[in-house]
Image 1: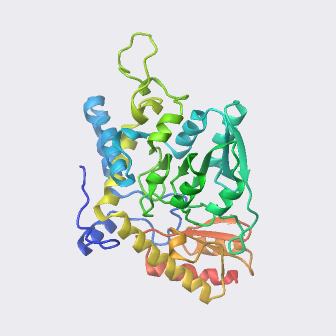
Image 2 (image 1 turned 45 degrees about the horizontal axis):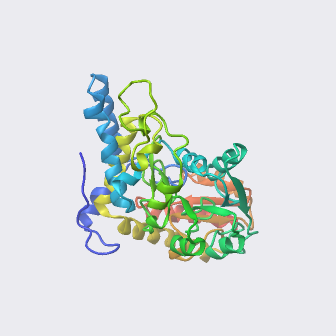
Image 3 (image 1 turned 90 degrees about the vertical axis):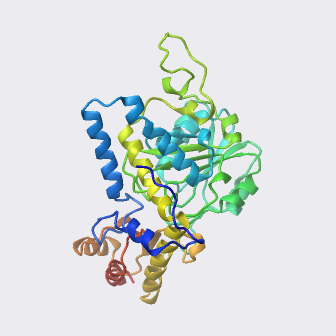
Length: 390
């Protein structure tokens, strides 16, 4: 069933009853601190996906009962992102959306950080191989605090040329948790297209998503909606300049008029649709988005910020070096602990043995990612083991 936003009274504030109801939806292991890799889905998501599967098993009408989930998911994505309903289309993953954007560009250069997650590199490389664009990589060198480059407006400005027609960034960097300043980047690049991979922040970071011309979000991480679901959203400028090069039979007018003729592209973002997606995934995405709405992004952001602050303060008091920004306004839910003593691989193994799930990202870095459901006990247990890195 669809849920509507309730009881969010002020920025970052929500009734205890609403937050308790949200938290009761999850049942992950207490030591699960790996939401930047995969967000364990809620009972609501699991139940809705199962309900739809059971409908399919008895032969429910796919159009009226199953694929109605598509509009429900798009409506929730519209409310949370600020983009119009007609400017949103569903995709099965962030990678699918980025490939649509990459092959939708015609000429010019795309500026992208050299340390981006591979999903935000291969689409541009493949489009370059196809002769559609040229890729220009930004390499800032190593940031003193993190050991990795932060993509800032200043870095982008230093790499801009007249040939660049689009800039692609992650809203939250997967390596460091650094939060991009989207409005400032928007101002720096001017009329160029701003393409944003929002998977590491959407739903838990209250960011101005409409600063982007092309936004794509997968549902399997912070939205906790399961694999195989996501959405893309386009501004008027994005809709005007991106071609539907990879648009398929569902991305046209009258797609079920099987006359063997090529139909005109659909209006809005639907022209980027390739084929019908999974209604089970759409239902899961809708449920995940609606569950976020039930408490509001600001309240989730504050709760996560309180937990990451507790972890960071504990690590710093133990002399553990950080590879992520300590300031709350520059990070989301990711905290990176750096090794200056014992090998990170050894400490990562100790965490795993204690039932604490994290990511070993490099020989000297362990990435932890905390959600609203993360407990103080889990944070303290992880901190105690991570002291061995110093």
